[in-house]
Image 1 (cartoon, helix red, strand yellow):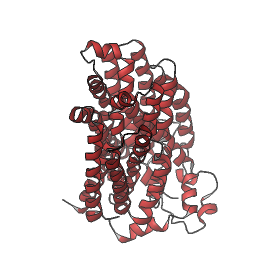
Image 2 (tube, one colour):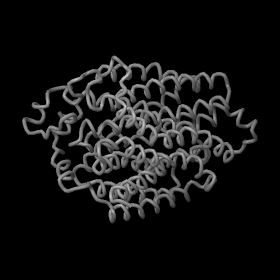
Image 3 (cartoon, helix red, strand yellow):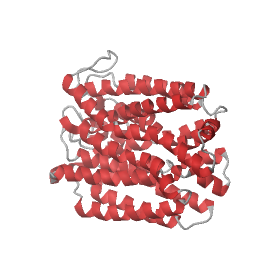
Length: 443
């Protein structure tokens, strides 16, 4: 095993377990709801709470990965969330459990740390595939949680939380022992040197960074919203259809709903490496089919692939509403499967681009794009939970939120002079003359 492959495996293992912990609460939402007599609105809040700490946490984690190295940042995240997960297994008050699971959900901030870690080891031509393998395999943790945890633990969510926490602490030790921040000292030092407040604000103020953040909101922000919401959605929206299949007790309905929910999660995860490969393929072939987007930049084909993904996601959201309104459970699950694939196209497409636009600030850029975008996981489940008809929330989000995002993405990605040169204030204003310019990237 080459050294860079070992680092990829470490990042992937760490993120897989973090993702498993992140959505382990959602996997047990029916049994938690029954144990504490929660309403539909309270279940929606519990689902949404998994994302509360992600926006600021990912911003900080991405910065920390640049500053102190991904191996250190990842080990700290896994240790803290693992210990709190262990403690949450022994509480009896719902209020205390809610707060503790809020902290455990912070394991999800580790995503941007792994993105930075992988970007520091792999070359430009293989970036999409490497990042796709990392994120896609790691994301499988949510599907494993929805599919396996209810079958393994039944309604005993406390035992699951205990064992997941122990695993996280052990992986933290391994990551600290074997992890290294970058392929060479110069690469690691460059990232560490570009962590000032001005460097951070420079990234945050680029229109391309904002557009990619919004694209990640409507792909990964949507994915985690669905991970949190789908078990409750199928348990309530298709209650009669699930009962007709022979699932009637709380544990049985939880298992069935979790199985349907896992369809989206597994496809969104397993197809993400393929999306990274497709971004690499479009790059090699030079495909730029959309006249409204840039076509002269080195990474322009990757931008065109991402727009294709965003259009597909929007279409699948509308079809989910149609299947729900028709009351057709099999059709809903089929659409959900295709939907998961299109989500993977978006998530993989975004982070095949980010390290290429901001090569000197990969953690800071990943933290902003991968962090602020997770607010979608907070807002979207609340829309789902409070729209009068439980099936129409998907179309409301698609038409009311995603179409404007696509419009902004097209506007921001139309420039041919270097995407990171366009934003609020010039590069010189934020960084002066010595900002570490990189042709085609941090120009």
